[in-house]
Each structure stands twice: as structure tokens, then as C-alpha cells.
Amino acid sequence: MKNLKETIQEAESKRVAVGHFNISNIEALWGIFRAAQSLDVPVIIGVSEGERDFVGVRQVAALVKSIREEYNYPIFLNADHSYSFERVKEAVDAGFDSVIFDGAKLPMDENIAITKQCVEYARASGKDVLVEAELGYIGTSSKLLDEVPEGVTLDQLTTPEDAKRFVEETGVDLFSPSVGNIHGMLKGVSNPKLNTERIKQVREAAGVPLVLHGGSGIVDDNFTEAISAGISLIHINTEIRIAYRDAVKKSLEEHPDEIAPYRLMKPSVEAVQGVVEKRLRLFSNL
Image (cartoon, one colour):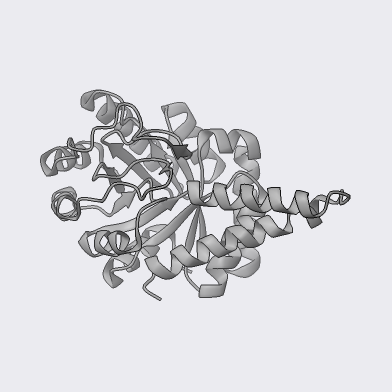
């Protein structure tokens, strides 16, 4: 079985993208895995700091590893949006396949310094773990939005020059730029359009695979253009949360006397699976 680095390299060579989907519980994990398995494509499970605190750092690592080993399947685990070296270290030690240091709100020099520390620790650990970092603030929360998140400026995107410097000075394996994307989904309208020309420029300058955060709410054609321009990994979270919430609400309303959690929650697994299948088909050009 290919490791995560090889999986992303293969996606780049095929001009497709690997899907990254966040979980907060085992229902979402099964929904995502079954979607990927049905299409026979690799998948990445993401857990933010809050999600890791809820599920358990070592517990979620054990869950994903158990599925990978039992099914001999390329399912990987990423420590999404870690805001300190300590939280990155925690995930590396727990056996995650990749980690993200998110210093997008920090001055660039400070972002570089902490990212470099994370890279050095990951390399010294002897573990097969990739390190990603971000440059360009796109917000912080996967939720429904009334407007573009405060502090996000869509006309101040990550420049090729800054991307090149950042990657060279930190040694990261993956790079996440600001290219018109935002975290969360705008209510009632599509999210802003990605700047595919900037994606091309940043990919060429950075020299490492690019990750697109804030994928929820982006229209299909824009995803396809972004992948062709150089995006190799795409994060989806808000869409999953909405599907999960709506399925749970409907299940509780339709079965008011049911008290078995596994019966009440089955529709949420199916709802997550449906969302993920749709996205994986698009990202994998199936």
C-alpha cells in the first residue's frame, strides 16, 4: 500500500485531488470510509484541535489505523489546524500520518520559525509523517456564515514570492495558500470563486503539493479548474456537518420513541457517505 506522500504524488501525476474530510465521531468516520471504499479511492480523515479533544488524540489514531489494517485500505489521518508546536508534537507522537501547523494569523517570520520547529521535530521523530503549513488567513471555523469571515481579505492572496520563501525556509511537505478560499459556507450563495491563475503561480513557485482548505460551498467547475491548476488535496468539513445535523434531526423527529443510538444515528452515516461520495467522484474525475 502506498503511504500518504506517495498517494498525493500519484494524485498530482493524474491531475486529480485526494479528498480530506473531518470527523467528530465514529458515525462520520464510517460514512467517509464507506464512500471512499465504494469508489476505490484513497481518503484522508481530518481532526481539528477541537475535534481531537472530543474524540481523543490517541483514540482517533487507533480507529483510523484499525480500519487501514483490517481492510488493507489507503485511509490516512491528519491533525488539522494545530495552532502551536505542542499540539503538532502531540499528533506526531500519536502516530498521525500528517500534521498542520496553522500560523496564518501570525507575522510571516513567526509563522516560518514555528513551522520550521514542527518540521524538525517530525523529521527527528523517525515517523512517516508529513508536515503542512498555511500562509494567508482564510478564517478559522467550519460553519454557516452570513458574510466573509472577519479579517479575511480576498484581494490579498498568497504571492508566489512568499510561497517560495516559506517553503524553502521551513522545508514543509505540503503548502496551503490563500487563493480566494474561506473556511465555512456562506448562507444562500456559493462561496467566492478561487483564483486559479494564482494557484498555478504558487504551485510553480512553492515546488510542493498544494492543499485547498475551505472547500465547502465551492462550485463544481471551480474545483475542477483548481485541480487542473495545481491543487492536490481538498478539505471538506462544513458540508459534512450540515448533512449530519439534518439527518439526526430528521431521525429524531420520525422516531420519537426510539432510544437505541445505533438506530437513530444510522441515517447520519448514510448522509455523510452521500456527501463524501459526491465530492470524491468530482475530485477523482470519476
